[in-house]
Every structure is written in structure tokens, then in C-alpha cells.
Length: 408
Image (tube, rainbow, N blue to C red; front, side, top):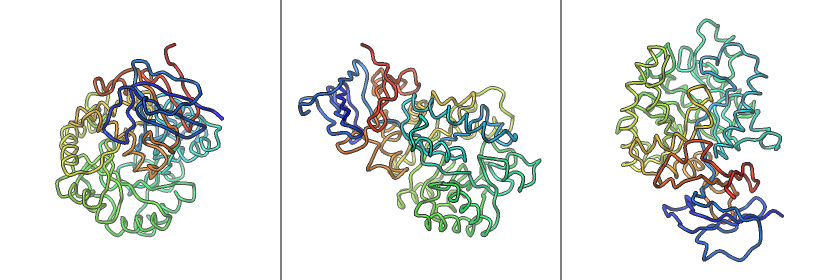
């Protein structure tokens, strides 16, 4: 039986409290105590001292793309899928070293990497795979118009095009057939797509409802990419249970989300930073400039209305979105007005709720799986200690030490 005793500044994410002198006791894969050191029971085991650092729950990213690609423009270049899987396996290890012990992924590769992680033959976050992202023809992820729809669907491993009620139901079933555990759709246009505007409404109400109903038949849910507001409104009415990005949401959509307890996935580090990335196509740059300030307003409205915000990065390990820095989302949240503790909750317990794993992970509490990180600073004073793998000095997943770089 393995046993560890972690000591130091402690943020459990079970509350807003910061425990100056905390202890977490781990036996095998479970937490048996997490709280003030003076209340900790006597036990033996290896002591892991955080020093001047902080003990936190393992981080969770609920919007990632394990594409195995080096650049977002490579999604539909015909690269061998086996090569993409190799890249995705490598990416998974980078994410774990950055402190991300769980992940919700939107790509076909994520399905296969998830299986490897479960079998303990791949080193990476525990993954909730969504399979290919579903879009209408000429929609947000239709990035290769030189191909026929049939050819695109056969060769692209990030997305699948579908039209009409029957086509949409078939596409959803295709994802479940491969092993998806939820479905992501594009309800609006987006920043990176050349053939649409961010406020375009994509999928009809009938198509949306058909996909939601099919997901419910598989005991799971649909999440929707929503940059524009009208498509988001239609998606919410159809029964989607999570909104990604939400850049241009209005009070109407925010109020509905609060009423229906629909979470908002942030992706702020991309929306606030993409306008400053060099060498972007002009259409991307123009769209991005409009998104940055709008996204801050959406976050403010969501906080005021009580909408739960969960951390998502939209990263794909491209040169501009490296997986060693997925933690930049924590800092981006504070730039959008969230407190450091709100950002931490977004990237731990709130993200676990989006994955429907909050009974098992997301906070440091007795009986939960021991998914734990130690960073080299105090995020309440300097949120940047969460932003890069170089600051993450210990990663524990299910009670197993995956990374240990603590000072002696």
C-alpha cells in the first residue's frame, strides 16, 4: 500500500479557504484527509513538502484538441492518422507535466489516447473524449472546401460535416460508435473559419433538437461552440447542456443559462491573446479583435448572474497554444475580472462538474481520487505560478506520483 503526506499551503477547492499550514494524506489512490495540519491524524508515509509552494487539486481543461498536429492549419492536410495519434500521445504527457490530471477533448485522436490512459499504457490526463466536432457544410470547422464533403469526413480527424435531421443523427451515432462520451457541435460561426461570420447561425432548431435527443439516448449531453448570440440562444432552447466560448452572448442567453444551470467554458487565453499573434490570416485577425473585449463582458455578465464558469483553453499544442502553458487560462480569467480563487475553482471543481466527475475529482476531500499538484508559488498573490509546466513541481494522479521536482 502506498502512502503519502503532503504538507504546505493548501487550497482544496472545496471552499474558498486557503489553509496556511495544511496536510493531505493519500493512501493508495484516495485522499483520506485534507485540511489543517493540526487536525491531521497520525500516519506514516513519504512526506512531500511544498515549501513555499501551494498544494492544489489537479487541474482540469474541458476544452482541448488532442490533434497530434503542430499547427491548426494542418487539420485537413491528409496527414496519416497514425502519425497524429503518435503526436497526441506525446501531447498528453506534456499536459500531465503541466498539472492537468483530467481533460475533456474534442477530436478523434482523444478517443484512442483515452483508452491508452485508462489501460495505463499512456502517460496523460484522464480524458473524457468527444470524438469529432460536428458542423454544417460550410460551417465553423469546414476547413477544406477543396474536398467533397464525403472526402472531408473520411480524412479529417477533428471534425465531421452533417446536414439535415437524419444526417445529424447519423453523425452523432458515428461518434458514439467510435467511443465518444459526449458530443460537441458548432452552433455558430467562429474566428478561425474562412467561410462564415462569428454571428452566423449554424444548424436548424430541428437539427439541434435531434442531436440533443440522440445524446440523451446515450445518457450524455451536447456542448455547443457558440461565438455569436443567436445560435447560442437556439442551442440553449434545443437543450444543449454546456456553452463553449460564449463570446457575444447577451443578457437573454446568460439569464437562460443561469435558469437552466448551463455552464460557460471560458477559452479566454485564446480570445484575449489571438489578436496579438503574428502571421494570422487577415480574416482571423479582424474577427479576433472584435472578440477580446466582448468576451470580457460575457464573463462579467455570467459572474453576476451566477452562471458556473469552467476552464477551457481551446489549445491544440500548436506553436501559439503549447500544452506546457495551458495554465495561462487561469491568468486570462483574472484579466477578465475573475478573482484568483474563482479561476482556481473554474479549473478544478467546476471543470469536474462539466465532466460529471465531481464526486471523484476536482477538489481535495476525503474519499476522492488523489489528483494533486504542487506549484512553486502562491496563486492568490501571483497567478502566474499556475501558467506553465516549469512552475508545477509535483503531479499526482490517482495516488501515483507522475512528476516530482520538489526542492530537497
